[in-house]
Image (tube, rainbow, N blue to C red):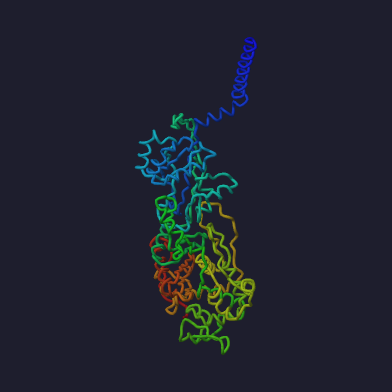
Length: 589
């Protein structure tokens, strides 16, 4: 019996040794690589180093968007002592459950560092360093934070950044984004997000059993994003912003020879720094929820407004093209016009009437009655065709987001939209830029620029250092003689003492322009002024739009004058011959 027990005991010992040997063989040979990786994970941390975002500059090299260094707090969930959650939350001035939520979010990747708080103060950084022995797994890194040195200036063109959402991160196809990334939400920041973001770097850090850094094993420097140079002149942006002031509206200035946008201002504006700084969360919420002022709306390109009498330029061209109106055609204005004896009257802004008018006088004095009748002769289809050829009701090909194409209506559009026919009274409203017609200030600037350049459409763009598509100059099909006639009449709008835009007159060059007062009952009308200059050789086109600003010949025209004088002070008209103000010699009012 003793011998049997001894044999059994020996068998147990032998079996145990064999089992241990097999286990060691499995651990060291069969699964050796797997366990080696686990051990490496336990002692090695991969820390991402964000690439500095590319700079955005104006045409003169002035910084509009840059990257400044900021201290960020990161946490490695596996190394963090959860008993220190309350202490860490107090230092960072956040709720403890926010920390736990971050940790739970990465429970499948506990060794991956996650951003806990961005852009902390030096005082917070000192507190974390002082308590480093207890705050295991918590460390500071210097990252780049987007900065906008000019604040509100150019905010709608530049756009702003926002943190990538979970859905956006999961839907990405190129896998260049990280869960903590900030991406462009509007403007240049969004359109050129891939170019601006660059390539991230990283550090491979060895830590001890307590999660504290021992040494940096390897490091890859990040590659900064590409810089973007805009066609904008920051000085003109500041000037236009100051001129509009607290009013709602937009100012657009084009270089017609180069097709460059020199100024594009929308008011009210906003400070893009609010979106990247955690300290400004209340301001950010207010900006995004302000449905009355709508400060995030780019009124220059993203919203359509009735152009009012500025549209009479289109009506004049369409009427001349139809052959049913000539430069010598006379209509009588008695202050109102009726389609039939019993219909409601369509009024002119001049209650007393302009009496007999030719087409150039009607443009000069902006007579509604003349253009009601000219529009009827041209017909709604011709009005729509010429308007679209001039770029209205069409998307502009420009490097911005949320572009509005505006609205140029016709009978087919109305049938689809309202299931109704087109009425003659709607043609009358159409002819003076009211009714369904909607345009953007940048479209209007391009429209007058096209007339100023004798029918050549400027190919507008905002970015200088990007390869521009090679395009042949494109001309509208309107007869040159008709364009020339309207262009000459536009000079009278400013230079004549009867012109509606005479408050824009300056003593150093001539301007061709058209004012507009767009009715939007029950509110005050919108105020428009749009023109080109110098008249003899048009180089620039300017549109001024003031939401509910009153008569265009008063408010918008005065602001246009301030802008043109400001351009002169900045040297934009050097070499332009001096021209006496008043009616050009040889012209008849």
